[in-house]
Structures are given as C-alpha cells and as structure tokens.
Image (cartoon, rainbow, N blue to C red; front, top):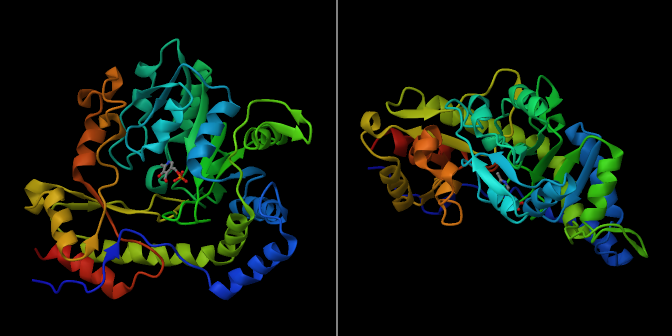
Length: 373
Ligand SMILES: Cc1ncc(COP(=O)(O)O)c(C=O)c1O
C-alpha cells in the first residue's frame, strides 16, 4: 500500500503569477480609477492576446459561457444545432439559453471530438449550425466538418474552451469555422480568474460582437441591438496581460507532466491515454485516461474512489454525458443507443491532476497508485 498524500492534490490548480508583478498593474488601476467599460488594460489585452494566439479579430469576455451565448446571438442561430454530448455542460446550456434545440451526435473513438461521419444523418430542415468542441484541446476534424457545413449552408461555432494556443502545423485552430470561443476560467491552461473570448474572422463581426457584449451600445446614445453585459473588467484584463508573460512556461511544464504520466503509465494493462497528435501543439489542459475494467481489474469508479481516499482528487470529466442531465435526456438524440462511443468513454474516463507546479514526485506517486493496486 502506497503512503497517503499529506495534502490534497486536485485535478487542477491555477498558476499564479508573482504577486508583486500584479501589484504593478493594480497600482495603475487604482490611479486611473478605470475599472471596466473597455478600459486601457482591456484594449491592451485584446491586442496582445490576439498577437499571442496568432489571430486578427478577438473580443474578450467576462467568462466563456457568456461568450458562447453571445457567439450564437452574433450569428442569429436558431432552430436546431448539432453538437457533442461529451463536453462541459455549458456547451449545451449556451444553446438552451438561446432557445435552440441541441441535437446530439456521437464522438469519434480516438480523440473524442464530434464524429463528422455521423453529422449528416442528424441534419434536418431546422438545422442552422454545428457546434463542435475541441475537447481536452484535441482539434476536431475541422476540414470534414467544414465540408458538411458548406454543403448544407450551416454555420460552425467551435467551443475551444480547452484549446488555448493549440496549433496545427504552426497555425492556430481558432481560424476554423465562423467563430471560436475560449474560456479563461481558473481551471484552464490560461486564466483571467473568470474570462473568455470570441475569435472571429473580420472587423465587422468583431464590431458586432463588441456591441453585443456591451448592451448593444454603439456610442453614448445609440443602442443598435439588444446586447447583454458580458464585458471583461480591468482587473481580469490586467491579470491576463500578466499571465501572457508566463504562459509559454506554463504550457511547457504541463507538457512535461503529460509526458511523465505517459512514461509511467505505458504498458499498464487496461489503462489507455492519449498521445499528442502529429503536427499539433497541444494545450495540455487535461490528462484523461480510460480504464478498461476487465483488463485493469478495477472499474473507473473504483479507481476514482481509491485515489480520493489517498487525497488525489481526479475528476470524471466528462461524466455524466450532457445528454444524461434532466434538461436534455428527453430529447430523441440523447438516447444512449444514439451515442455509443460517448457513452462508453464517459464510463471509462478519468482526468488525472495536471498543472504547472505539480511536482514530478507527485506525478510518480499518482502513477504508482494506478500501477500498483
Ligand atoms: C468545454 C467548455 N465549454 C464552456 C465552458 C464554460 O466556460 P466558463 O467557465 O469560462 O464560463 C467550459 C468550462 O468552464 C468548458 O470546459
């Protein structure tokens, strides 16, 4: 029996930049007394973030959920939207808040993103868009999805909440589709405490989104549409500017931890992990493993309970499937028979702790817990 860890290890912990560096920004906010409403840090953060991500048009938000809700508004999406059940519940809630009917389509078994092969069968005359998720930061099969969207005249909105900085052959995946949405929640690779962004493809759309996140105001006296209040404030924006200075280090630490888990867990019977995709720069937001109980000799839930008893708080992301929650389970597309791959993955998956300051000894300890029952 391995020794129980003294202090709890959570699935994630935010990376905190040096406090004295944040005080430098806070002092400027105190001096200017500008706390929100497209202040100087908000503007600077949008510019520097767009540069970092390698995109041209981006609008930052108070959080990722409001960004998703607004993205759907920005494109006037209505009727039915095809989406994945294997995600955080906010993906589907954003549809619900827009009075849109979610239509769940199964995921592919390798990287758990929406399966393009199964999208066509779910399209009806009411379908207006596809909302796939780059789940765990794994890029969706974007070309196949775009082909279907073009054929049927559908919009594509990517939930890229997990995909900060993800690139394919050096190009940001945020260029895919009509809009992409990031989350900067404290649990994410890049955080502004709470926060998010919409990435769009032209200046006109950015202007539209900027209006929508600020009650629809175009200028002091002109309200051009019924917007919401989804603005990022100056304290968040300053925190984001500071985090940008450290993000490369955070991502490379996460990569080291992922590779350490892979080294330690390779060859463990019944445990499967995901390898990096060829030519992709990953975000390493999560480290999911799948437990095949017959081969491993313990179910995923037994492993979860055993880790917890040892002060290791792994999380079963994403279980239950969104399609199993009471709001959605009555939908025809929510039936488990319609979603065999997602249903199986949701039963087997568990995400192990990963964050930049997680000690290699702790990673080894967790891996040993999994290796030696
Ligand atoms: C896939 C996904 N979509 C949307 C969200 C919502 O983002 P936020 O928490 O910033 O509102 C999250 C996580 O929080 C998420 O994991």
